[in-house]
Image (cartoon, rainbow, N blue to C red; front, top):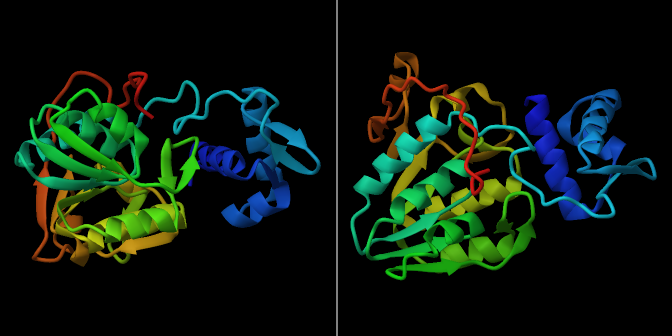
Length: 269
């Protein structure tokens, strides 16, 4: 996990718990307390956290939490946009769709906003915002524990909610991927949401750009045997040949002169 990813997770954790000990943070991420103190120093310098009682807490007047840290671009935004457009093009009118968490999922929701008739199940308030301007799209939102930095809800209420429906398409993203374990997430509650979507849908769709192969997460979601379609920007031959034969792989890359990392519009994380 990179320092930026770890700092993002620390920020989210403190927003949920209000105060976290340095020792607990170090143990959670498997690094030294010195490393965590450097992370905390950076977050405190930005006014996002404050040191307090051997740990770190929210500032007296916390700034709105963001999935991406201030000034940080959305990685591989163009690739994610191309994936989202292709997925939306493959979703028929009148379908029922469950959407999970992540910036790619938000982009899928934005691409789906052009449909005239859909039913969307989600725990992601960014999805709700993306679709709120279209009265032809019914959005059903789960209750649960609100995560300020992600603008979504997690917990048993979400998994129970998703288990109450069977959708035509279930769309999930992932924190990282590897050929042995398949889909992985940074937090167990995110993994539980994705597993509930996968278990309660007719067509299981993974949206993930190629950078997810280089990340390192520790919470298992599902192997590639539990995915029907995999939308990505590009996949290497060595990865493709190890995929199950039942998995349809759809590459969505296009050429552009812009950098792969583009500063996000305000609504994106």
